Image 1: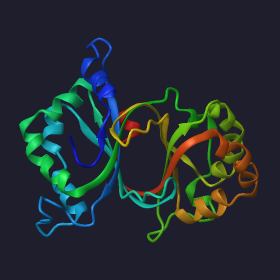
Image 2: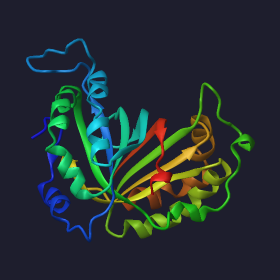
Image 3: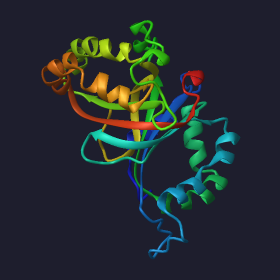
Image 4: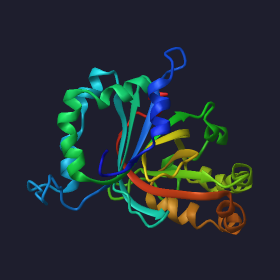
Length: 266
């Protein structure tokens, strides 16, 4: 059992027992929280931070061997909504099948590298997801070109990725519609792009909580997002009455991308 999260054995059985004719790609969304210093046992850090240990873990060889690939990685700047957890990184691996995810866990080359993840990771969610089809956000239509928004991307404040991890309250998905319609207006004006919306089918590693959706929206800059979306009067007016009751649980993560091949992977 890993020291950085609890395994959902029921979902693990689904991953392992899905028949080949019903199997297919799965996108594993990883939310990562690192230890300040790596711990290889007895408090020994080997001179590494938790982040550096996880970077050494990155299992490119085993992933390539089973036909999986890292399709997304981003550094988290802040986590303004949630239970107070400040996440450090988001990563997404596309596996060719659910069975291949289980297969990788038993590979010797993967297990040799895993010691670094155990040393560096404080806590993580690994959420198995499927892209929504069609992508609901594409229905927004044309958005403002980034060169024409009030706060376009700069070297100091570039492309911002906004992740939402959502657990709906009963009837919450329907309650959210009015909020989304209102929130879309400033978002479209501010040049929002839909990075990818997913349905969550299970959380293989976490703290026992389950999630319903994971969404990525992309904005030209943090300042544009904060000034003209978050603080939009129309959005604020209905947030309390629509958005908050719609959700049992949520995280919002503001990120800067390092790798983004997400839409091409659908």
